[in-house]
View 1 (spheres, rainbow, N blue to C red):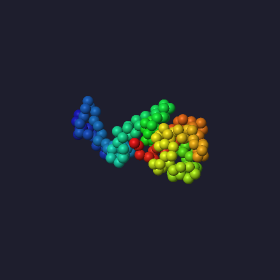
View 2 (view 1 turned 90 degrees about the vertical axis):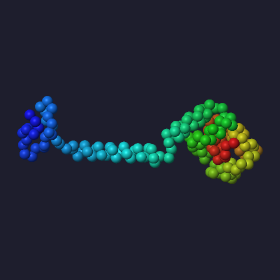
View 3 (view 1 turned 180 degrees about the vertical axis):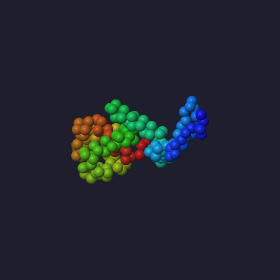
View 4 (view 1 turned 90 degrees about the horizontal axis):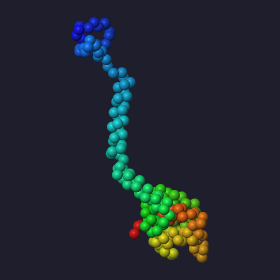
Length: 177
């Protein structure tokens, strides 16, 4: 029996013109909630694509590179060998700088100023270093102190990792060689 010959009551939804294995389909519209879900999903997908591909400032490669640098810096900090190259590398890591700045603000800022501008202690933001300007020299001064000038030895108080973070924070305010 063809679809046009199927009986249809008045007010009933129309039946599609094809029949398969004696089964005819209603020609019904999709429910509004289903259409709304479809349109919202499409809008969300386009919006997310625009945000992730066009409006973000950093690319996937930049995020991977930043993560690799963070891992290298964390590995350097955990290694315990704080030579000049390691301290310069640590001074370019955001997580180490944040930890170093927090330690600096609680222990060093009272004498050297919140912005390393000096005060009771020496100015750490300029390029003039009284006790040597290499990262190893700065690390030695922070570790051992300069009692003649009133600088206490912070190495035993802070430990090697926090001391290296503070030195990395100070170095971050200077151009790398």
